[in-house]
Every structure is written in structure tokens, then in C-alpha cells.
Image (cartoon, rainbow, N blue to C red; front, top):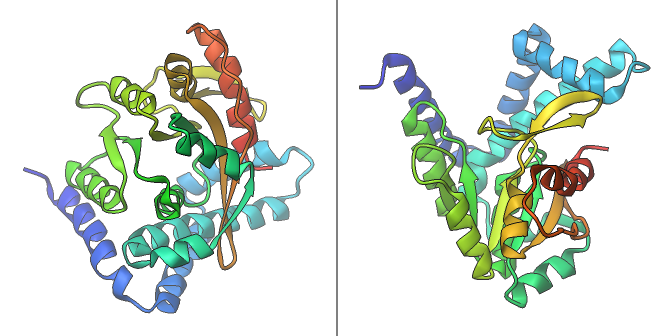
Length: 278
């Protein structure tokens, strides 16, 4: 049986999807932004980790004031993501489409899909990837398959799977079941879409790379799938705008034959660098 803490966490997510989506949007936005600002002012351990990472991105020339301003905006961005996650089920498809500013080689990506060629969208944890998924479906590209990290408590993981499935996604567990690679490859060979965040290794088997001057492990799955299936590998960047969202489709990354991990790292490097915040 789940403990009291797990039941409390589950109840909090349940309230998010049952209450926040029914609140006036301006009230909900104020509440989430206020919570973000309180967490930012407290400068807890997680905020300190965030600022340490931001310091590496900004470089040594950045002032303390610049760092603090960016960490505050990062916390507000994170709060906005959660607000939108809870409200996505009630956001009309028309708003999802009209509110997205798309850039880059969008037409080429959708032409692959129309021609029956599988596409792997490799994206970072930026902006709102759930909204971007709902936007792809609302654009008429059809459903797609993704992988979700199994989190604790299990009931929260199940809530997230149900939420994403309600938006039209097919969700496979990253662990605790059959390995998802075979199913993903099958979907790509059938001319379907696979969307995979690639900037955080959740399996412990990722490839070590240099990222903003530090060693980090990144997922090689998108490259491995493109090599195995001949699917198009397309990096995607996401961001928030004041009154909507932004997405950029980068050019397809050429994929050489062979399954050597060094080759996969070479293939994935453009994905990580193009999807990294500039």
C-alpha cells in the first residue's frame, strides 16, 4: 500500500488536473508564478543546482545579478510548464495551433510524414513538450509514440500516462516492462512519428559528451532508431513566448550506416547542440 506521502503527492496531481483547469486562467497564472517566486527567493538546494548549471551556460563573465535574473525566469518558466500541463486538457485545439509560432524546415518534416517515412523528433526539456505534442496532433500529423520515465509514486506515473494518452499520444514505459526500442522501430518502419527527449539520460546507458564545458550523459536512442529504420532524424527546439509557444524544426541530421556508439554520438551531437538554448 502507498504511504501517506505518496498518497499526498498523488492527491496534489489529482487536484491539478481537476481544479487548476477549472480556475480562471489569470488566477492560476498568478498562483503558479507566485509559488515560483517564493521558491526562487528561498534559494533551496535545487535552486542552487539550477544556478550552478546556468553559470556554466552563461560563462564566467556573467554577473551575479544576471545569474539571479535568469534563475528567476527559469523558475517562472518551470511553473508555467506545470500550469499548462494541468490546463492542456481544456485548451482548444484551435488555440494550440494558432498560438504556436513555427520556424525552420517545418514543411520538410511534414512532407516526410505525408510520404510515409518515419520521423524521429529529438527534442530537449525546453518550453512545453506536451503542448508541442498536442500541437503536432492538432496539425493533422496523426498520433505519435513517445517514452515516459517511470516515476514514483506509481499512481502519478499512471496519471501522466493517462494525461498524455488523452492528448492522442502512445506512451511506452522507459523501464519496468518490455524494452521500448523494438516498438519504436516498428512504428518508424510503419511511417509513424517518434518523439524523444534526448538531453537527459534516464537509463544510465547514455553516451558521455561535452556539454557547455562539462561532461554529461545524453541519450543515443534517437540516432540508434534512425540508423536501424532509415527514419529521418530531426532536432526540434521549443520555447515559451509571451502569448503562446515557439518551435523550430532544424534540418535533418545525416545518419551513416553502422551502429557503433561513437557514430551514434557523432550523429546526436548536432541534435544536442541545435536544441540547446542559445
